[in-house]
Every structure is written in structure tokens, then in C-alpha cells.
Length: 284
Image 1 (cartoon, one colour):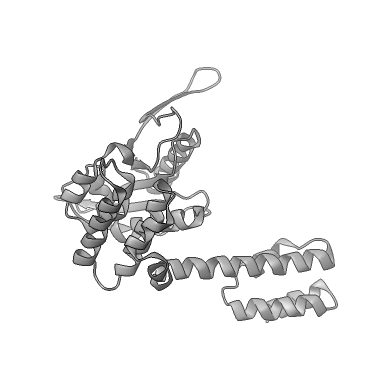
Image 2: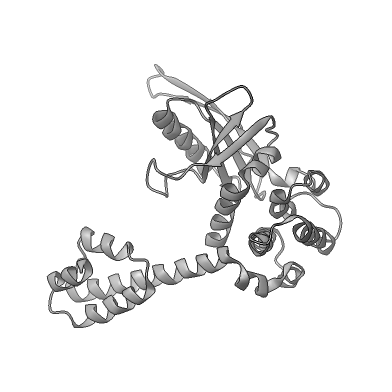
């Protein structure tokens, strides 16, 4: 579920980043594009960075988008690290927007942080925009007439039956989504719906398992899980046979994308005479 949610959120950032900007109250931009994660390792990189172009400016403004499932203390560290990474790389203070999907407990993520060094000589003040999706109403999101906002609608405030809301979401996607993203939008809306409603029957209103199977995004996620599982199994075999797996061999295994290649190497790992022999086959 976590992988589905994270991948779905990042797909929405990449494909409908402008919708998230408008959801956060940002207007007046003329163009935008998602920036590839090139600064640091993926686990440390922000969920998304957009270059946003405004009227009368030739250079873009960087916007960081961070998606958190729940309000947690670690959100503060994440958004501060995001901002500092982009500041160091781009030499400009980025705009930071955090979307929090579901409430939990009494914690609320403040938009302001004030950090003071141990001896008090240094102080950092940091401010970002925090959007709590459950404080937005479904009616205002639907009124935006923006298909990229539809997956967020099940997480917003709605007084009626969830069946009514999900039917409206489905109708909007059917009316407004292009054929190349229709299945993905339905699938991502299902993923977001599961964060709020623990009722598999509701998902049938959005196409159920048929749409999840047809969605290129979900299929890619399933392929990724299968690939990562086979990579881990191969590394387990090597560790069982040779005790320790050197970093270069581990990195080489994790870089392999083809399932057939991983299967072939797994068979060889069981039979090879030495780690050097496996290393040679890995490089071949």
C-alpha cells in the first residue's frame, strides 16, 4: 500500500503538477515542468520539484512538493532538508508545499520552524505552505473542473455517502481524461480512496481490479516489486554461499532491470565456483 501511495503521488506530481499548485492556491503561472531527481539519492530527494514559470519572468521558480500520508514530526526534517538541498543546488530559496493526506491524533504540522544552534549564535527561521486535504471540501475541488485534482477528492471533506462522491470522481475522469491517462487516473484515485475508506467494494465504482490491471502505472509498480524481489533473492543466495556480498556486486545486481537476466544469474549463483566467477558473469 505504501509503495502504491508513494508511486501514485509521484505520478500525480509529474503528470499533474499544475493541479497540485492550483490546489495549494498558486495561480498566475504560464508553464511548469517536473525536474528529474538529480541532486541526491532518491530516498533523500523531495517527492517532487517543479520549475514554474510566471508571467514577465524568463527564469523559473523552483517549487518543492512533498506528500505526507499523516502529520508526523519527521515532516519538519524532510521539508527543511528538501529546501536546503535545492537552495545549495540552485542558489535560490525554493517555494515549499506539503500536502498531508489524512489526519492522525492531535498533531498538526505547523507552517513555521525556528531552529536555534546549541550555543544560540545561529538561528534559522523556515516557513512553508501546508495543505491538509481533509480541510478542503470535495465541492471546491470538483468546482475547479481540473481532472488532475480528482484523485485527491476522496481525501477531502464530504458529508454525503462515499458512493456518491466516488461516482462523481469516475464521471469527471470519464469526461475529462485523455485516453492515455484514463486508466492511470482511475487507478490512482483508487489508491487514494483506500487511504480513507477501508471498503474494497467501494473501489468497484472506480473500475476495481480490472482498472488496476489495465493501468500502466500500476503494472509498472508490480513489475518493479517483482524485480526488487528477485534482486533480493539473488543477493540472499550470494550471501548464503559466500558470506559477504561486496558493494560492487550488490550495486551490479540492483542495477539489473531485466527479469530474465536476474533469473539466469540466480541459477548461476547456485552453481558458480567463486564470487569472482559470479562477478565475471555479472559484468558479461
